[in-house]
Amino acid sequence: MKALKKNFIDEFIDKSKSKGLKITPQRIAIYKELIKSSEHPSAETVYKKLHKKYPNISFDTVNRTLITFSNIGLLQIVEGYGDPKRFDPNTESHHHFRCIKCGSISDFSYKEYNELKIPENYSELEIRKVKVILEGICKKCKNKKDFSK
Ligand SMILES: [Zn+2]
Ligand SMILES: [Zn+2]
Image (cartoon, rainbow, N blue to C red):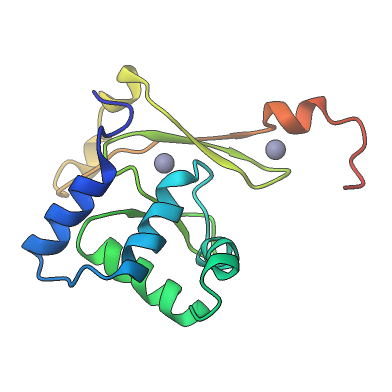
């Protein structure tokens, strides 16, 4: 399994074209911002970063664009952490570690988790994806002595 796709932008262009989504400089900028980050950013985070470079871009545009991207399969919405939504450009099967102190989410792959058995009473359901979420304290937070900030 690939940890990271080779060329995100190629995939972006291919997928947009095949789904009839117009490729605009703004959409490219939003997508680039997302793939630059490994922190599963929220729309707010993406917006704040883009706003410096593109003062005309609105939060609403960023938010709507990210939802559109997820509708055409360009990214996943990370579930289970409430609002705000967090976006993930890695659409390959992978798992997450989430820090309960700083809220950071990082990717990891682990073959054995991909092969987890589905509980018997769920066998009639059509399971599409199995995701494991580990929660705990990340390295950064563990090493931080001052928790006031
Ligand atoms: Zn942390
Ligand atoms: Zn992820």
